[in-house]
Image (tube, rainbow, N blue to C red; front, side, top):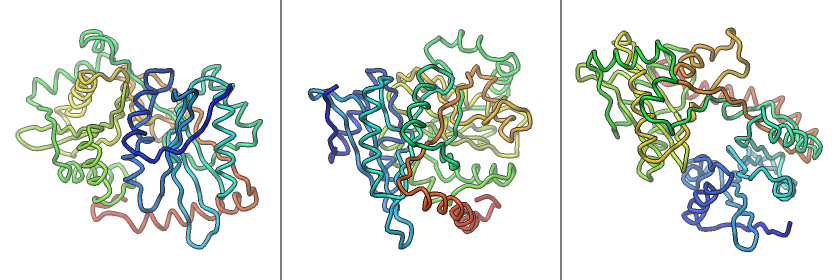
Length: 352
């Protein structure tokens, strides 16, 4: 196949191209947009690559690059990409070009949304291994997720849910929970910090989340929802949206009034809103690595599954490391460095 790779220096044009790819067999990911890359600057620099045949885009990749201290070799990352159709010839060319780019760095990581439980996914895994890529020990994004089909009408969507989930949605509405669109990111962060402290997970400082939500919502790529009871915000979620997909990116709830089930009505209204703007897929953004009751994400999985979400395992993150010894050394040291960095950013509420 005769096609070429070029650097796209116009961020708006690159984002438009991602939506153009949505008309093919590629599902564009919001983490590949120029806006997500801008949120990662100045720590990460970005290059937007496009593969074309006779001027028609076939594939794309936003490659982020980061330098660590005085190391002469940067780390490269393609978040939730590259975006490539299920065509072996296109994958061969894209991987060849990415490998060439990786030779100037310590390693290059990819984690495309390719289902691992399909023939296409298994063929890609075999291709990566044959070319010298290794399964990454550092899965930056969630390896697995659940997906809900938003194309059915309300009645059909509700019918596909578990009876308890339907009951809780209706209970919340009867008890007076109200869900509204909002730009009150500070209120959401307070709920998020409360959730982190209660459930024992780490989060970033407030400024990070406010920057993400403000930028993505202002660009039409995100939306904050707040659930209120007796005039008080008791739960919230933030969706990211691009093309056919809405991602449930952040979720939070207060300890108060959990008995009125605000999270159930919140998710239902977010799903309906996503469908109203043309989304056909609701990506629940995160599921256990294994469907095992001992997995720490099992409770979250059961909640999402109740809405009819279908468990979807991705192929996960894969690294191409032209300097294997340094790559192994990096992965021996970096977990300790990152742990120190995370602890420095613990918020006063007790989370990260």
